[in-house]
Length: 80
Image (cartoon, rainbow, N blue to C red; front, top):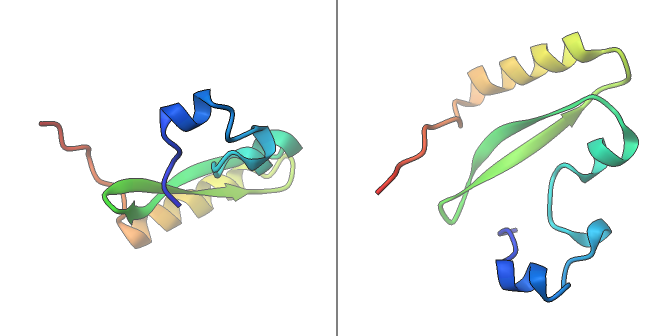
């Protein structure tokens, strides 16, 4: 799903719980989380959010690092 346009946000078409984002679960549950690059959709970067149980941040960093090293989705931005 592509991110909403600014006009859609200003018009109130996306209230908090239906806003298309991958960070809602982590922020609402207060669980440790990390967002990782997960590829592209029509040229726009897509992220994946991983969550772990409280006080398991070391596992989160290991999982995140392993995911990034395995997938190689991370790319520097291209500026015109």
